[in-house]
Amino acid sequence: MRKKLCVLTLLGSLGFAVGCGSSGSTPAGIPGGGGTSANVLSIAVDGGPTANQTNGSIYPNGAFATVTICAPGSSSNCAKVDHLLVDTGSVGVRVLQSAVSSLNLPAVNANNGSAAWECVSFVDGSVLWGPVQAATVTLAGETASNVPIQVVASSSSNLPSSCSGVNENTVSLLGANGILGVGLEPVDCPACDPSQTSTPIVPAYYSCSSTPCTSQFINDSNQVTNPVVAFPADNNGVIVELPAVSSSAATVTGSLIFGIGTESNNQLASSANFFNLCADLFNTIFEGETFGVNPSSCTGPGSFIDSGSNALFFPNVNNAITVCPTKTPAGDLSAFYCPASPLNLSAVNEDPTNGTQSPAVNFTVGNAQNLFTGSSTSSNAAFGRLAGPVPAASGFDWGLPFFYGKNVYTGIDLPNVQTPFWAY
Amino acid sequence: MKALFERSIPFTSWLMVGIGWLGLSCPALAALGGDLTSVDADRAHLKATSLEVKPSEAYQVHPIQAPGGTIISEYVSSTGRVFAVSWHGPFIPEMQQILGSYFQQYSAALGAKRPYGRRPLNIQEPGLVVQTGGHMGAYFGRAYLPEMLPSSLKADEIK
Image (cartoon, rainbow over all chains, first blue to last red):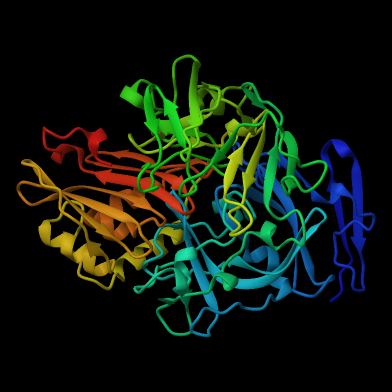
């Protein structure tokens, strides 16, 4: 089947570009005119794919993007997939099987020579399970050719016991059609490469050629890959740009810009606060306590910036902030704070390698239950004051509310090119 | 107008978790709530190596290093019971192994309706607390039995 593919790319403040590839050798989605606009992908905090469904639900503080996924080498055997969660806290493209099943993407093998499957665990107790397959992924005008992605299997019939958790393999469970992981690393499991570790094998990649599936080594080159590093250019990082949201807003739109310092539209601002990292973490000083990495061993826990976290999450120092109830009309909200009135707080971020501190980051903690159930805010998708607790002595998680009103730079760990960094 | 941002976990999804749980191949020795032998069972199941035991009068901390580098610390009371487990590192440990007989209670709490979103867990169940955080490549978390904490140990010290 040949399907005409047309990618319409919204270019933020720069205007429009339309890239259409109907046939031939021109990869789909690359604007013929070139120019810097090819590196700008429109993103939207719009409540996600189920927000407008009957009895559907809103995904609060999820930034979503549309990607085009093609069979390797084809510009016609493609699927345009909307609502992938833009996640600077993970690495690699993960897409529900239902969205790409017609493409018959080729398998990518584990080191034992059989098709690789992957189990990815997330902090919320969920897992994504499915085969690793090769695809060409186009984001705005940038194309990652023939990269391993994870296809989240519709069936969990071969789920290994070591992959325990809520298997979010449908739109209604995941609240998205997939995840666009554009974080700090080129691949998602360095410890799965036999050159980086010793036996026993980490339970992340599996072979399912026999039952039950067994964990396997897999070389970096076959692991689920950050699509940005596979671009021919603009491949050293991303910038997330979103407008300010004071309390809440129905929806907001912004940009995911590829490359840092590679084009006129992605230069690191001279006023930006810049942080080298230690184990992909930095330090946050809050209420007199430093939530940071161990300075001598460069090990966690520590603090981090993550567009895929849908609130600010930080230790409840002295249990000073009221946590929301488990039973509310909006469900279990125990992951969020519910202060009686908005709290104005601030914290300082610190480079763990040289101790350089940034000016204080001011933020406000609102009452999540009021925001989720209030008549004027319950249908909104963007919340600037959403926050919740993490264990004491752990780390500060600067989730999506941190991104509102900022340009946040994520610099990818590229050996011999650059060390990973954050800036804003 | 959208009323809520809820989702619920279909029974079939939990059925799979349950099947996985029943299919656990190693002995059903619980970690959390189990006795000292469960520390060894965890280490064997996770193919982990023992690190130095940190002594204290009221409890001992048994840290182990799992494949991939995650450090898992099991807190054992003076009566030999595991009352808390914490972890930090590149991988989330197998929760059913860590939580032992408390895994079902944890699973039931996870199944509650809640808003969409990727975020840390803060499960405060009767007799069980599970809290997590971090992101891909850098996770942390802890699970403990609040009623079994020694009086000399504050919950915030489990890390």
